[in-house]
Image (tube, rainbow, N blue to C red; front, top):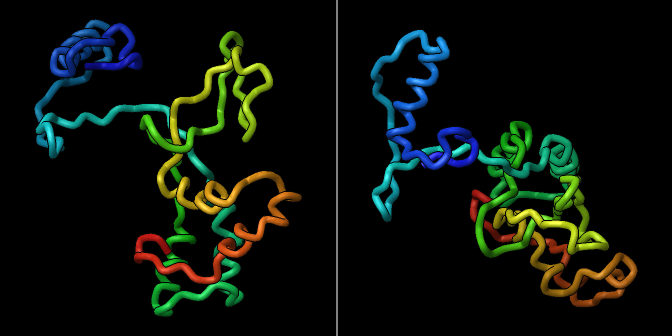
Amino acid sequence: TLNKYGMEFEGVNIFKARKQVAEKLEQLGHIEKVEDYAHNVMYSEKSKAMIEPILSEQWFVSMKKLAEPAIKVVEEGKIKFYPEMWTKTYYHWMRNVRDWCISRQLWWGHQIPVWYHNETGEVYCDVKPPEDPENWTQDSDVLDTWFSSWLWPFSVFGWQNSEKDANNKELHYFYPTDLLVTASDII
C-alpha cells in the first residue's frame, strides 16, 4: 500500500493505486501517453512478495571532506596496507566517495542523536538530550552497523569527556589501534 507520501492515495494497494494515479493524471492533462514496458522486478527471498522501492527521509554524512585527511595519512605513509595492492583500491574508493547513508529503520542499535520539538518542529542535534525531554521526540532511526562499529571502544571502555578519557588506561591500551585485520570490503 502507498504510504503518507501518496497523499490522497495513502493506504491504497499499489496495483490499484497505479491505475488511480494514472486516471488522476489523465484528468489533470498531465499524461502524454501510457504504454507497457519491460523492467526488472525484485522479490523478497523470504516472502516472495514483490519489492517496491519506497522514498523515505534518511540521514547522510558528507564524505568528501572526511576523505581528504584519510587520503593524506596514506600518502604520507602513516597508514600502510598489506598487501600493498590494496592502496590503489583505497585511493579509488576515497577519491570517488559518495555521501554515506547512516540511518537505518530498525528497532535496535545506536539511536541517532536528533530530537524534534513536539510543538515547533525545531530540530535539536547533540550527544546530550534536550534539557526538557518531555517536549521532544527523538528520531526513531538508528545508526548504520558500520557507523556503530567504530563506537565499539568508546561503548566498552567508557566515553566520558576528554579529561576523563585522557586517563582511561583501558581505552588507550586498545584504541587507537595500530593494526586492523579486516576483509577487503572494510579497508
